[in-house]
Length: 85
Image (tube, rainbow, N blue to C red; front, side):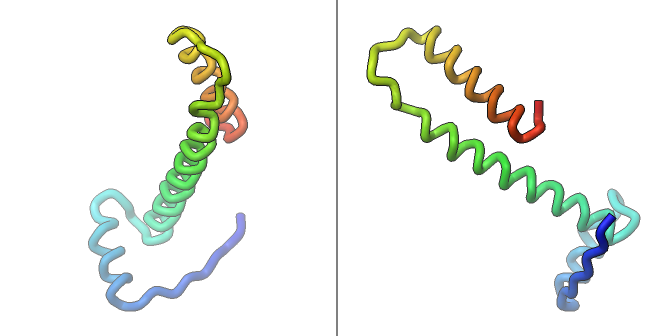
């Protein structure tokens, strides 16, 4: 496991201390979870951007069922690529 050192000002340290109780016992645990949540948020944002690239790309008329199937396939592919399946 890699160790990463960060420095925060006194105000942020106090905010972390207040926010972490009662759910976290250490600042490290709190910060690790905050980073995990931020990384998930970034992945979701990127996934939405990719999905929007596919919207409106069809040059032919498609049925609602075909659109639903295509969306499902794209969604499954994106989840698999990100290891979220």
